[in-house]
Amino acid sequence: KAPRRLGIEAIVAKYLVLAALVKLSLHAVWLDLDILVLSDPAPPLTAELARGEAHLIFVRHLLSQSVSPAVIVARGTAMTASILMGYAGWLRENPYLLDHQGWDQYLSNNHGDYAGLFDYKGRNTTNQDPDG
Image 1: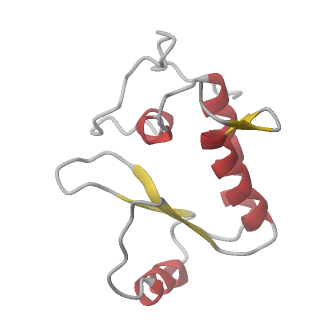
Image 2: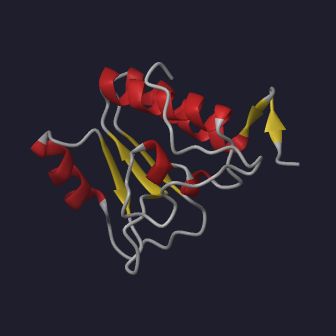
């Protein structure tokens, strides 16, 4: 069983914390514990946020088109909070063993390795409910 705190799965709580921070108009950054940062990432991330186009910035693997939430940069806006809360709710209803496998499906990233999958309970997650 996955660890739970106050009845919330850890992979869902990650997005609730990020949503709470960006709702306060703060930019937020998540780094998984297995990420090695060799130089200061602030200048390129700040420059990307200054462009004003992206609400969320993710990394991707070199050999894959999948969205990887190992590094997430979230713009401090209400829209970003809404996206993160939407994913947290979707992930709770469509449980994956790793949240990394859910973003391709949630964003309809058909080029990703995890697009069109079944969750760990065998439910087909290829059809998204527009109402959440």
